[in-house]
Image (cartoon, rainbow, N blue to C red; front, top):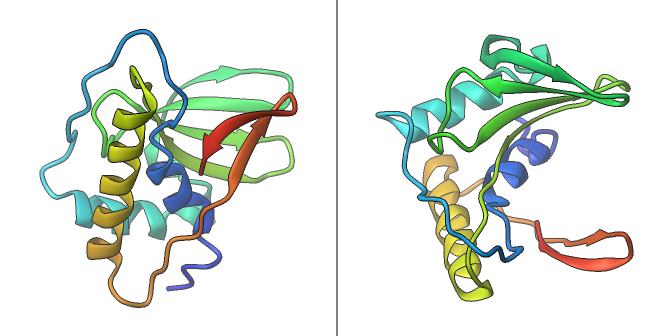
Length: 136
């Protein structure tokens, strides 16, 4: 498995938003075996996550599909851009940076256990309109 190629998949899952929000949505598992689910999602990358695409909302440069299988219950989507790039994305909001950071660390730790020693997390700063928008 080429984990570098699939970096967008696992980055998106780990990116349980570090941006704060006024209310906290509960985060819970949406599958019985999240590690097996993650392996299936990674295997579906070459097909643009076709087996995971539910109902679609189309915008000018991206189509967002509800994910049929959600590792994080109620928080996952498949994004497909006009340039044929795709991502399986799970995100959530938090009431403050402390909760966001704890969720992020937990998600990265969980993926490390699921993906094994060959996988290593890569972090990058996220900017939105020139403003700091957290870490991915």
